[in-house]
Image 1 (cartoon, helix red, strand yellow):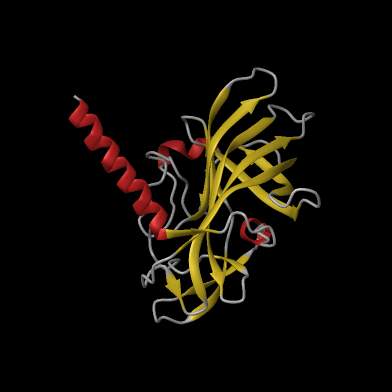
Image 2 (cartoon, rainbow, N blue to C red):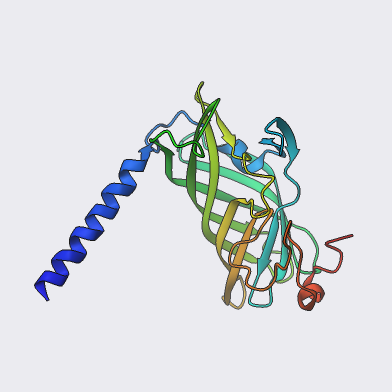
Length: 235
């Protein structure tokens, strides 16, 4: 038993060190501004010919509950907090299912940011190096709205740290069928009932979406969920 425990400890330690060996931690650096990763409406991608082009991000895709009710949201403002450099104050509008758009406010708290160390072709680009940031998220819908509540979870954004120390939304693989970025996983809590249900969103694909997404080249909602706010998605 002791031998098994020792072997597991060694394997776990090696795994942790191997992961650390892949990345440089840039979280302590307070001067970086991550706001554009969340709110920018365009990004720079590479097309099938290998040429850069400016791409419209399109609408955020989201779903709540086990019935994958459509969740729409748009960020109208994302600003770095003047007192805490790890906090980003956000505002926007959101809509669940066939309801009305409702204003929301909230925060994104940076909890992790790292870039790749080793010069692997998929992680290094001409203008910089790839990385990813994680945030703890809390969003509050207007309490006066019908069926309103709050959202809590974790948000991950893949970025490129340029050679002149700017953070850009990572759109290098956007021509891929499986491309995704800026994904949120968490839950929605109804203000009145306190009931919690799963809530997820992302760019181009939705994490933890089960059989909702039946698209191959791009996201496409399963017909059996159309009544849950997806009726007009493809129109």
